[in-house]
Image (cartoon, rainbow, N blue to C red; front, side, top):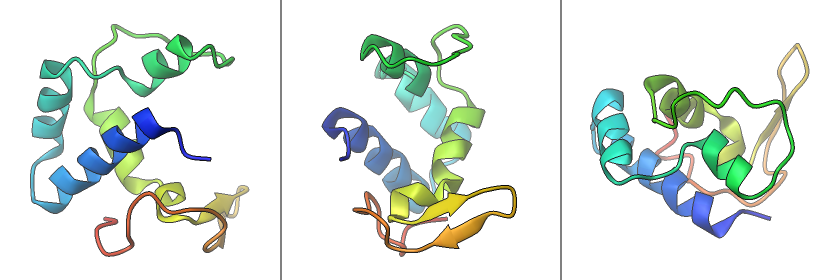
Length: 99
């Protein structure tokens, strides 16, 4: 089940990238808007994990990870061999704008 708050951010990141906005500009916009990073968001929701907190700022690594993650298209990629199973869950972004 997609998280409604995180979904908005993910969709915005994909839209900006699709419009040709650079990753560094996307990072700048997220930080200016005070959008919590994925780690800060997870911590604020009480999700358990071994998080490296960082300084709370978005960086290109966070954005790039989102943009290359097939999970957002409704696919599941698993294991060391990267076995891909398509359409396993609801897509947040269309394959048309997936990079």
